[in-house]
Image (cartoon, rainbow, N blue to C red):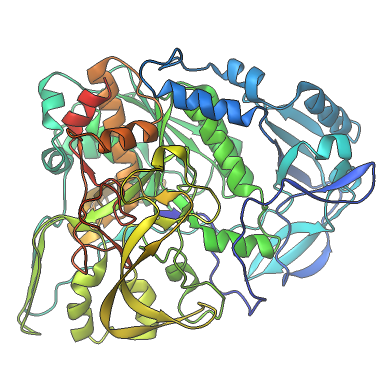
Length: 635
């Protein structure tokens, strides 16, 4: 998967504490106005002047949902057989009427903004207002000064001062996004680095195809019954452009007949550039290969908070895709750091969570990559020498941490490696949690066991652990393995968790946790048992075209979306939000999910491992699916 913010290279900063469900509005200034949470500007940025008053600025103002507890109960009922609302999903207009913002508050806000010459439009979901106007207009409306700044080599605009609004409006807002446009989107897909040296011969599934996935996870019975994804639409939310021709070529070379007009691309807020186009390409190729008759609608948002929110909002408000996947994410630790720097809004995570609640209420199955840094989700981005508190702590990924999205974890398939150079054999005999500890002896022999290599080579794996933002959802409560853990301790952290040293040998530990447990379900994601992706040059279809092998939970999220389309077409229904259903199935005797619950260093994601007798662990969630059996359960 790919992070949507680049946090490397920070100067030394004050100590960081992870946030917990911060209130939506803070620090009332007077009876008539309040400060509103927003993404501002990095604390250490250099200001070099005011933003010209005629500069066009676009922001989002996100209202808090109404009747949120009632909405949660409704979503639960849509996934519970026997209830009056089972699979009776809402339209977008019904969602807006029942759970969107108070219409009077929206009217007050839009009238207020329009009085300053700011164009304000309520999105169809009823809780996000998109506003466009000049910098001078926003300065006056919010009592701030938009300024030009530079930080880490980037030039952007931010705010001097915190925005204020009339209290009767501000008290109903969750956050403001977009008053700062600082962002640096970077590719985080995990490309397979060749292990070949003189005398080194890896063996195993080194470059998988869609047929390999179908064989591994028992998908073929659905194809045998004639299921193809017909009548389904797969939504892909992404932050990079791609060549549609690459996907068609990939399917053609794989012998998969498809409709030549199956892909629709929508550039949300003007779209994006090509940084990370490998991510978008693999999302489309993989999801479309598994459900060949499904349509694919790709929503390409720009590299900004508003772009990411608007891409999701567009996909969910269109309400044509029965399943949506996303393979971009960021560590909760990093998001908290950015919040303390006033780069990110404290209401940021909840803004996405509200969108995923909307999707669930409309019967859309959503899937998010859980991360590729194993249990230490921030480590590879921040590094082992940043000096930043909590940089190497255990952490999970956003937006996969939302209780209303299915978090896709990763596994490693059987794999062997023989090295004559080092007189060494590496063997992984069965599917296990993705963590590169099985390669540690080889990395050690190559002289890679140094602090500079630990976070890039030794801490890779499928994301998982405990959210410090969201509480344990009801569907996870009382599921064996949830909120307890076994771990393989490979590292000793310093006092403020800004760096680690490697232990002489791993030790087993156990304990309890709290919060939303991640991931929910897993499939193959290790790049050394990874998948072939077909690319050509950005914006130049067919130029320097060819295959490369990638891995990452980036694959699992779109693959699950493709499988969702296949299952829906097989069953002639719309399964809706997966999580309450798959956790219920997992505790039944005929569960379609196979927990990987062996304990120890042969089954961990860099820390979390399995517990015998349970159905859940924080390395692989509920385990891997028997897709045909899962389809039978979802009928």
